[in-house]
Every structure is written in C-alpha cells, then in structure tokens.
Length: 124
Image (cartoon, rainbow, N blue to C red):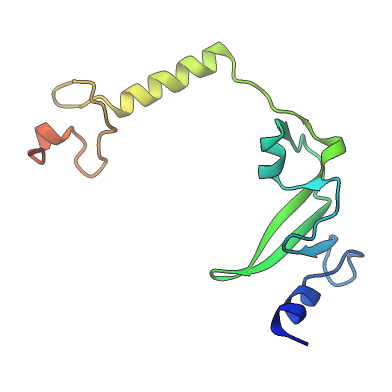
C-alpha cells in the first residue's frame, strides 16, 4: 500500500464515523456538494445552511480543510445596493488620497508612509 493510498484512506470517512461530518479526500466529493468557492462560481452562496461535509488534505502547515455545502439548498448571491457600491468607491478613493497634498493618486497610499510617494520623498 503506497503513501498516497494510506493518505486517501485516512481522510475517507463518508459515514462520519471518525470525524464529526462526512469527510472526503481531495477530488473525491460526491455530486451535489460544493465548496464556497465552487458555489460562488455558480452564482450561489451557502445561505445559512449547515456544513454537509468536508474535504481534508495535507498542505502547508499540516492538514487543511474545505467545507462542503449542498448545492440544492444554496441561494443566489446577493448583489450590492447602489448605496453600498457608492460607499465602496468612496473608501477606495480615500485610500488613494494623500493626507499631505490631498492629491488623488493612481495607487493606494502606502501605510508605512501615510502620504504619497512624492510627499514622502520616495519617488524617483
């Protein structure tokens, strides 16, 4: 039995005997279950439903997990209101405005300087 087989067997628990939820190894989730990222690509969100399963794999720093949700219970993604979009635009503009010369720059003002690169004397 190879290392990959032992690894997949350690994370294969579809009946939730060893783990608190059904657990699957990488690339082995059954149809009808999806991660948040997979739901998002379909224009969906979990919508408050409980976790239906998890995928476990060995990654940087140890064992990693991705939670699975039922696609059938997922809800459409919400869209931002015009007021929310306006607030985001104002916040992003504030991040580009120098506190010293009040110029709106094409880049975000570095936090370490607190002012644009010209005022900080870092621009060449």
